[in-house]
Length: 105
Image (tube, rainbow, N blue to C red):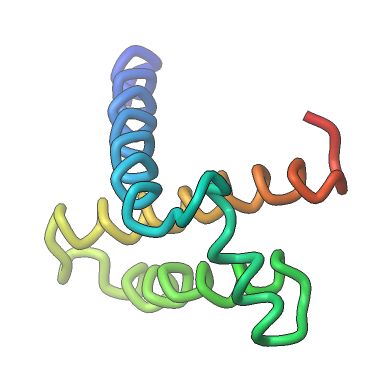
């Protein structure tokens, strides 16, 4: 893969990520706090919201761990869904860490 092709792939992935984050944001945000679901889950589970996020985010990671063993057995749609979801949870984790003032922006 050339650098140009790689950069195009990254651009497409980032655009897909933004699209999914926007649509899921509408679905899961109550009130004005985009991260409210993780905070509520943390209260229910008596844990940090980051732990709740990780618990939810591990699902696509474990799916990918199985998929990489036989990568040709999955469709493009399946791969993109899982990889995008995994990437999105990392973006959400970074935003949550900023919101909790654990890291600086």
